[in-house]
Image 1 (cartoon, rainbow, N blue to C red):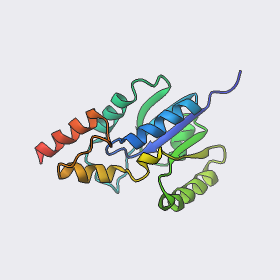
Image 2: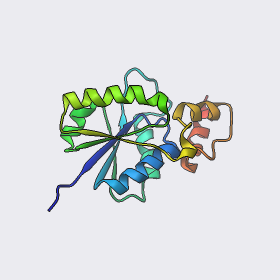
Image 3: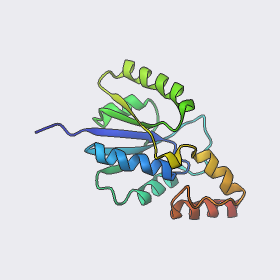
Image 4: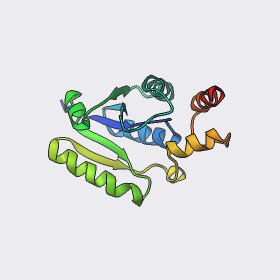
Length: 163
C-alpha cells in the first residue's frame, strides 16, 4: 500500500478568494489530503480573525472530502512535520511572486529536506487577484462578485457596516 501524500496549503486567506479556491481544487486532485492552514502572522493586522478565516475556508471547501482547515503559528516546516505532510503547496500568480517563494522554498528545504514545495499557477483569470485587492475594492463598495464566493462577499459587507 502506498503512503498517503499529505499536502499543506498555507496562507493568510484574508479573505479567501476564487484564486485560492482554484489552487485548493487542483491540490485536492493531486494529493490524498490537503490541509489548508491559516498562517497567524504577528506582523500583519488581518481584517478577519483567525476563526472567521477558518469559518470562511470551511464554508467554501465543503465539497472536498480530502481537504481539512486549520491554523498555525511558527515555522511552516515544523507544522508540516507535525502533520506528517511531505508537500507544501504555494500559488504563483506572476513572476513578482517567484523570488520570495523561491527563497522560502529553499529555506524550507534546508530546514526540512523531506518536505517538497510544489508551485501551482492559478487559472489565468485569477493571476492578478489577491486578498488585498479584494479588501480594497470592498472597502469602496466595488463589485467583487467575480473575485470571491458569495459567503465572503456577505462577510465583507458585514465588516463594512461595522466601520
